[in-house]
Length: 128
Image (cartoon, rainbow, N blue to C red; front, side, top):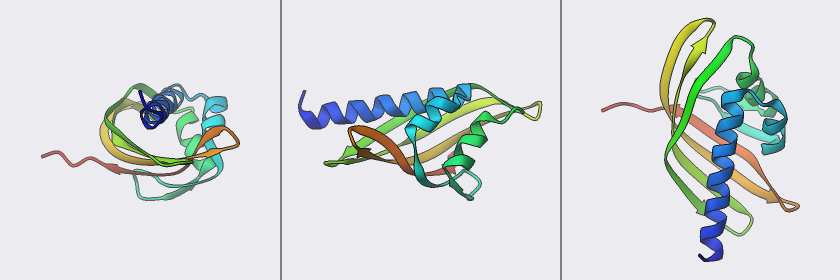
């Protein structure tokens, strides 16, 4: 496998690690993966920083039972990568069941031999 293919696989693995950290509310893992200067747009169209991004997944009234990534595509550059895909999520929020499919775009940057998520955008997937 060439270096570009290996890099794409590394970013794909990071995306799956991020999804697992989101599902389990793993604050240390999220802090490790998400850059301090993260700037993103959540599924409700709100701009979020690193703390707001992380807090959304560690909320005590949120239980994510499943979070699966589909159609993951990674474009790589020398010190950056863009991942796009669909996340299918289900669980409970405030004791009420929920499920949804969301398109996402994540921007990863290599900083001092460590990949960090620096930007992201999520929007509801329209069926049909």
